[in-house]
Length: 178
Figure (tube, rainbow, N blue to C red):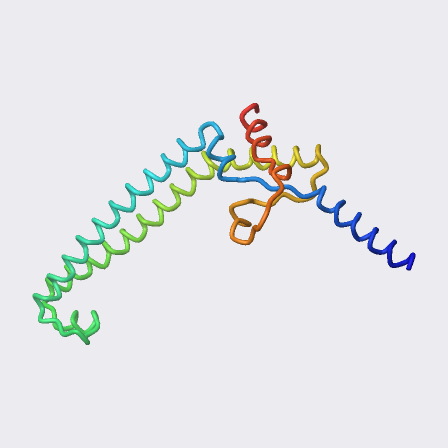
């Protein structure tokens, strides 16, 4: 009987001790309150949208040129571009090759735009994310917290959260003061 009571007491203390080292925070709230974050993300989103629209317009124009060239040469639905190319006049074959080169240039442009957006993200947003991560790590080390969970990821499965375990306000304060 003593062993059973001691076992349950030990389990209870162990479960309470583990709970002491767990915290959670809303990463979205922290990031949205971080100076400069919204402006930098909005700027990158705007640039990305502009590039996407430009690429879509260029792609549409290329598709229209291709459709006209194909229709001028009596295309059939089951024919491959190579089969159509064999029936084309030398001038149309050259136009077709130019369209292929334009398509390759468009694909290269799309990759360049992706690289530019990725570079801007790494240059402008990544330092903010790293700063937040350093603040969280420092706070956890100082307060002997072993694990921090993001509320956004836990929310669907979260039935209850002790408000004392939510460190969002503390992290926001620390991030804004650094």
